[in-house]
Length: 231
Image (tube, rainbow, N blue to C red):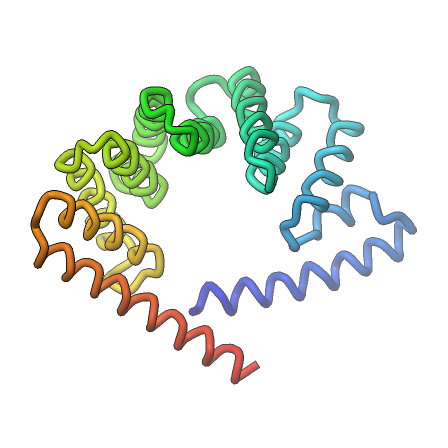
């Protein structure tokens, strides 16, 4: 809830800054104006990518980051996946194999492989991403929990439900230790864990997890409704 309010405040301030910069520089495509864009759309991401390429060249770190952003926003899966793969190659050339952006791109490419049911390639990407994240952030970080959850998804797709359950449980435990019991993303992890329990025949444990996930979703909807009313 606090994050939502802070995000709204930042968006309003960024929009005010954008108007001031646009009036001063008399250009909509000036870097200062573009830097204040907070609405994350494919159109905006493409504009920023094009501008950064013209300013910094095609192999600059800012271009690599924006390329990954465009890939993530593409509604066409094939185009988006290709962009993500391009971003990973470019980021590795720029940053090497020990950088958060490379670790995230590995995870993004892994998700693409998973959607294509190319599980061995997805597994390789996620394992590389996990190793890199642990080297950068240590053993306890929300990005590491995300990768653990993704690994669980791979093993679930491979119908290795026990392994999937173990990774889902690790992801859930890590995020609970970081954010507490009511953090919104716990809902997806609880749902995944519950599904794994059910697939293994542990029906009571599965239903308990799904009930907890539903409770978190309901509480989040109440909070969002409260924000709408008070606004």
